[in-house]
Amino acid sequence: MPDGLAYQPSCDKDWSYWERSIGIGKPADVIREDKAISWRELNIAYSDLKTELAEGRPTGAPWEGFTVAARQVFVDPPYHLVSLLTALKQAQGDRGPEEITILDHGCGGALTCLLLLANDYTGIFGVDVETSDCDKWNAFLRDQYGITEPRFFRYDGNRLPLDDGSIDFIFSQQVIEHVRPDVLDCYYNEEVRVLRYGGGAFHEVPHRLTPYDSHTRAWFLHFLPRELWLWLLENILKRDTATARQAIFLRWPWIHKNAARRAFGTLTDLTRKRLASKPDASVYDGPIGLRMIFYRMFNAPLIGGLLVAVLSNFVMMQTFSVKSPEKALGAGK
Image (cartoon, rainbow, N blue to C red; front, side, top):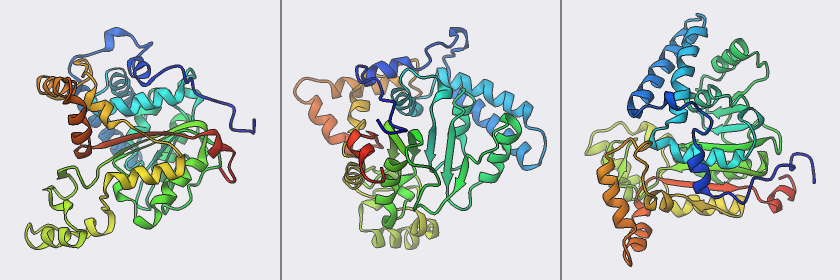
C-alpha cells in the first residue's frame, strides 16, 4: 500500500458505538449536569486567553483555566458538539488523540482547535481567510507546546497549504455557506487530496431550506432569489448587506451533497439520524421534553419515517464522508 495509506478505520463499529464512546476513560467525578455552565466557562476562559495573547502577556495561567473547562466540555459535551465529536471518534478509531492529524477547514477564531488541543489532540491544523489570527495562534503553539512548524494558515480558498495524504480528519462548522461558488468544488476536492485513505470529513452546513438565517437575522427571505433577498434585506428590513453580498452564499442542500459526492464518491447524511435518534438527557442542552416529543413523532409507525424525510430538509445539515481506496489511489489523490 502506498505511503500515507496504511490506516484503515475499524469498519465493524457503527456510528452509535462511537457516539457512546465520547468521554470513555475520563473520571466520572468531573461530569456535571449543567452543560451550559461548562460551555460558558470555556468561552470565558477563551476570551481571557485571547486577551493575554493580544497584549503579549504570559498565557500559562489562562491556558490552564481553558484546559480545565475544555476537558469538562469534552467529556460532557453540549448537544451541538456531539455529532462532531462522534465523527472524530469514528475517524480516530483505536488510535490515541496524539496519533492523528486534524484540519479545521475554516477555523475562524480557532476555538474548536483549542478545545481539541486541550484534550491532547496535538496534531491540529487550521486554515482561514486573510483576516484570521493565524500568526498569534502559531506563536501560542510555539510558546506553550514548543511546536515550531506553522499549524494555522491563511489561504484564499483554492489550494490547501498541506501535503497530499497528511490529514486523518477534517471538519467545518457553519463554514461552507461562506465559500464562493467558484471554489465550492475545489473546497471538497482539496479535502480529498490532503486526507489519508480512510480519513473522514464532517461538515455542518446551514442552507437555503432552513427557515431562519442567523447571519442576517431574518426568516424565510433567503428562500427567494438571491438579488431579491438582498434587496428586501436592504430596503425593507434596513440591514447592511455588505457582508451578505461578499460572504454569504446559502445554497440548496442538494448542491452541497452533490459537490461532496463528486469529490469523495460517497456521503452519509447524518441529519436524519440526528432527528430520529433518542436524545440523551446527559448531553442534550435544549428543552429535553420537547425533543422527546419530536423523537416519538419521528419514530411513530408508518408516519415517522416520512416526517423525518421531510423535516430533515429544513434543519441544519450534517454530513460525513470517508476517503475511499479509489480516491486514495487516483492521480493526485
